Image (cartoon, rainbow, N blue to C red; front, side, top):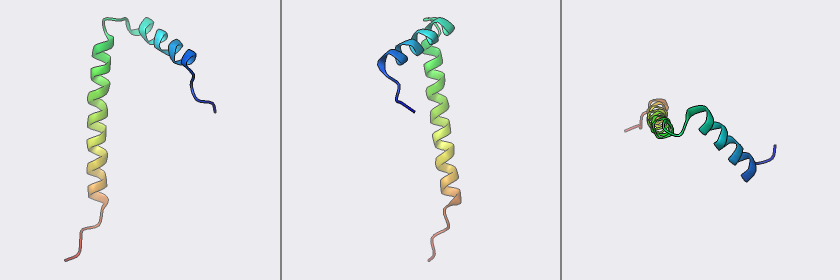
Length: 56
């Protein structure tokens, strides 16, 4: 698999702008950011729960 070049990234960006419209892009980006933060915090909680308790 080859990494995406600048031309492919430009095409993807244009498709996203056409699909969502330029007015909704900030809302979409904000929503994705919130979702990623929640996902990251849940993963961290799962990792804490799966770690064995330290022995005293």
